[in-house]
Length: 205
Image (cartoon, rainbow, N blue to C red; front, side, top):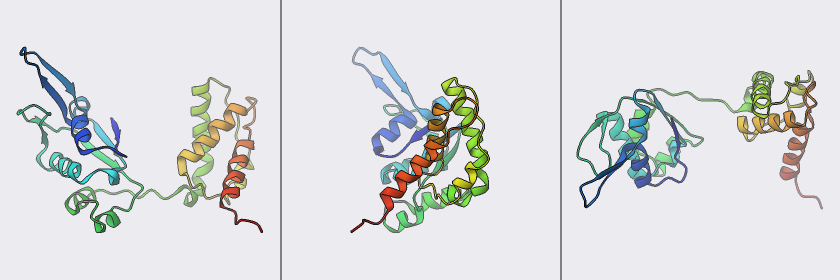
């Protein structure tokens, strides 16, 4: 299960993770189940960990260290059985230096680290990724599977893909939607590249 932390508050983070119990005046009890309960012994993927507020960082550190949590409105501790995977586009060391990320959590998370290079540094993967996204798009849109032109990879070698995988996926889905079911329509790629060039070009006198 996954949760995007961009813009989340400390209170919302705790409720989404731990759940909450509501005690009514008539003695009835309602409960909102949190992710830690729903995921069981699976994996929780925290997207954009650098956006997590400091108070919520303390809460996450408690989950990692004590292996237990308390739902809001409850005094009963429940075990944390899952694994955590986090990702970020930010440099967490710089956030720590700016006082926006706790050192204890930073060092705890750095026990296992994978640095994924930007797409511009993985030119050999682009053709494979295009075929992967073609297959996804064809299934999602219920369209015939078009073939990637052999020269498309060369046309993309000078483009740095500032949007990385999301940008490439968007290009491919657009291209598949315009294709005739035989060859992949490459105009979507060229249009996106030209739009980017027009935005970054120096203004003319």
